[in-house]
Each structure stands twice: as structure tokens, then as C-alpha cells.
Amino acid sequence: MFSKTRSSRLYRKGAWLAVGLLFCFKALAGEVTSVELDAPQEIQALLKQYVFLLRMDASAIPEAGPDRSALTRRARREVAALLATEGYFSPEVRVDRSDTARWRLVVEPGRRTVVAEVDIQLQGGTGEPDAELKTLHEQLQRTWAMPSGTPFRQADWESAKQALLDVLRDERYAAAKFVSSRADVDPDAAKVWIKIVADTGPTFRLGALEVSGLRDLPSDFVARYNTLKEGAIYRRRDLLAFQESLQSAPQLAVVVVSIEPDPQQAAAVPVRVAVTEAPPRRFGVGLGASSNTGFRVEGTYRHLNLFGNGWELASGLRLEQRRQAFFTDLFLPPRQSRHRDSVGVGLDRSDLEGLKVFTQAVGVARTTKRGHIETQIATRVQHEEIQPEDAEKNSYSTLTLNLGRTWRAVDSVLNPRRGHVLEIQLGGGLGLSPQARDFGRVYGRIQRYLTLGEDNVLSLRVEAGYTFAESNDGVPQDFLFRAGGTQSVRGYAYRSLGVKEGSAVVGGRILGTGSVEFVHWLKPSTGLAAFVDSGDAADTRKDFSLNTGYGIGMRWLSPAGPLAVDLAWGQGRTRPRLHFGVSVAF
Image 1 (cartoon, one colour):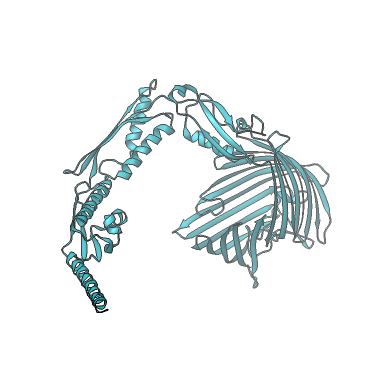
Image 2 (spheres, rainbow, N blue to C red):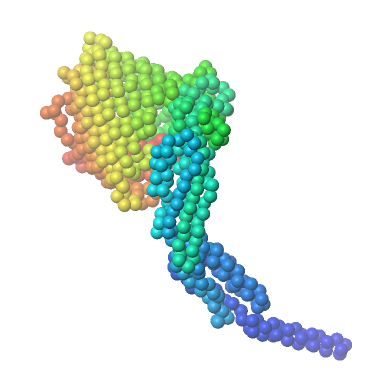
């Protein structure tokens, strides 16, 4: 019993002695509590991100001397390799461990290496005129991204080489490659000499289309969008334009246009077009509301491959509080991606500012898109019945022709912050009934967007129109003008500015409006607006007078689309008018 108790006491004393010796050894080894970096500001972020010694927990630094030495050697290697990518090839790196608890990684990067000379040489181009290659060589030398005097960075070096190769491959030389690319560094002089030898390979010319993926669409569907010509010199931008044109077709879900850069096929390289067809039938239902025409419900139906001919049938019914419309349009595939023809019928009934209008129309149209320019020419036969409140009812039958062109050059279609939109329309009509009148019409609108700083957008809008006729009697309301409401003169009801007839407001032959709006974006999707609108619609110049509205509003880029809510005061009016518009699709 006595011996067991004594042994237990000796065991406890031995354990406490071992713990004490361990603390002594840790004190002698010197526990590290932090590792600090002493380096110029421009390289600190790079080193802190990648150097293991600076990223590890200081308490995890090994206690053994050999292990610590290995860790510091690794740090020196990592720093040297990282600085070399930034153009520092002669750095001085040391680990100051004079304070055993607080280590310092001291880095002096030295002189940064700069590009001394660039030599770009071209080989290949068999059969090309010397002048062509000379011009190309001058272009490459001129646009090289790392000219003499530029700091040498590994990332910039790789990027510049790829950019040079892209220039060659994107313009006629699809199989271009590097024969050699060297960057000879002199660390003592802190200079680098660049020499690149590129083989252009042969000039590529376009061959026939090779289409894959068509299942239900007609075999010539893709060819009708084709803007490429066989025998033309290959340019990547031309293939991208063709791909973009095809991608705009609702019948196709996925489109990839490419070539195989095989020098053996350079004389007539096949253009590969891989497509995936979209589901042919689409149904849509939507709800909405606006201060112009009230609450709205609508349904749409689209058939994207009618009768297996690639024809697109679009039909819809829209029911609003103050306007109802039904339409059916048939769109044909384009011809060489230039023109898209359509035929359609439509019914439209509205009751706005005491004027009831019922229009029935059938017509044909041709739409052309080239870049950011869209042109449409349309002709239709329409019958219109108008009933102004407290005035005589009339009806007209007219053959109309309208040519419209829109230039749309903005940074974003849904939320433009810079750029412009210009629209011009020229049209006219021939009366087909005794009450109808012959007329001509011109209309123009320009909207300009200016960015002021990062969060401010200034929008300027001017629109004007004139209908050439003896009076507004016998001219369809679509070819006359009324103003007021959202997108016109806020502070006034929708289409409330025009010609008084009985108790109603009808269209006049003259239009002129303008708007200045300033939006400050508090967040990427929320902004505050202030605006001033002014304008009028009248039948004679002496009756034309500016009506001014001003107010404030809110802008919100909602998932359903841009939403604008404005509170506006009309000239001489004490009560404001609310303007808004929102829609939700299902």
C-alpha cells in the first residue's frame, strides 16, 4: 500500500518536470507570433497572396532549426519567382529573425526590367503580294502591346503574343502559328529584347456551308440567313456576324459557326454551322398596368415552323381598360439575311380622351437589319371608324405606305446610359372612300443619353412631325398626332394634347415635344429622376403652344423589365399626375 502511493507521487512529479522542460525548450527555440512583410507597396499584395510563409499561421512554424531554414529558403524561391513575373529579375530577399517572436520578410525588388527592342518577323504568305505582307507587318509592329520602354510582365508578355496571333488568325490567316518567340533578359541592365517569328500560313478563302443539327426546319433555312460568299477571304468577324444573324432567328436555340484551320483546305475551307432547333410552339400570358391605358391582360401564341417551311406565325390578344387589340402576323425567313417579309391583319379599338377609334387593317411589310440600323417599309389597307364625344361619327378607308428607319447606338437596350436613338418616318396615303383624304407625313425623333460621372445619366429627347393635308379631316388617326402622357409630355393625360372636336381630343397635323431628364443611380438597379417635358399637338401653327410638365420619379430595373414611376405637374396645375408602367410575363 505504501509503495503504490509513493510510486503515484513520483509519477506526478515526473509529469510536471516533463511539462516544465517542454516549456523551457519552446522558450529556447523561440515561439514565432507573427511574420511581417517589409516591401514596396506595389508588390505587397502579390507577395501576401502567394508566399506560403506570409499566408501560414505563425504558430505553425516548425521549432526545429533545419525545418525553419527550409521554410525560409522556400520563401526566397517563391518571392524570386513571383517578382520575375512582374519584371524584377534581381531582387534581394532575406528573412530577419533577430526578433525570435516577430520575423520580418525583407524584399528589395531592384530595378524593373523594361522592353528594349521588339523585332517581329513574318514568314509564309505564299502567293501574297509583298505589299500585303509589308502592310500587315507594319500593322503588327505598330499595334504590338509591349513597345520599347514598357515594363516587362509575364502576364503582359503572354497576352501580347496571343493578341498578335489573334490578329493573324482573325484576318485571312486562320492557321497562323509561332515559329519562335523569345524574350532575352539582361538582369544587370534591366532590359529585355523581344523577338518573334510567326508563320502566317496560306490565305484562307471561304467554301460551302456544312450545316448540321437541322431536324424539322427546311434544309435551306440556314442558307437564307447566309451573308458569306464562297471564295471570299476568311475573316472571323464575318463568321461572327453570320452567327449573330442566325442566333436572332427564334427557330434556333443554339448556333455555332466555325471553320477548321486546316492549311490543306485553305483554298475553299468549309464553313461549319452547328445548330439546335428551338421548340416550335410557344404560349405566353402577361399582366400589366400603365398610366396611359390602364390595367392589361394579354395572351400570345407563336408557331415557329408553320407547315414545316420555317414560317413564323405570331398572334396575340391584348385587353386594356382603354384599348383592345388583336393581331396575327406571318413572318417569312429572310433572304440572304437582308430582308424579312411579313403579312398581317389586325384589329384595334381605343377610347382615349373622349375619342373612340376602331381600326381594321391588312398589310405587308419588309424589315431590314444591318448592324444597329433597322429599316422597315410597310403598306396596308385600313378602315377606320372614329366617334368623338359630342361630335359626328366618321369612317375612312385608306391605302397607306410608310418608310421608317431607326439608328440605335446605345450601350444597353433596356437601360441605356450612353449613346443615341434616331428615328425617321416618311409616309402617306390615298383615300379609298369619299370621306378619306390623300395626305403625306414626316416624323422624326432623337434621344440622346449622356453619362455624367459614374452614377448620373442625362437624357435629352426631341420629336417633331407634320402631316401634309388641307386639314385633319379624312386622315387616319395613326398618321396624325396627339401628345401627353408617358414618353411624351408628363403632367398631362395620355393623348390629351391635340385638337378639340366636340368633347373629345383628336389628332392634329403638327407635333413638337422635347424632354430633359436627369437620373441619379443610388444603386445599380435603383435611381431617382427629375425631368422637364414640353410640347403640343395641333392642327395649325397658330393653335400650337407649348405645354410644360415637370416632376420627379423613381427608376427600378426589375426582373420583369425597367420600371419608371413619375409624379408630374402640368403647367398651371396644382394637382400632380402619376405616370407609371409595369408588366409581368408568365
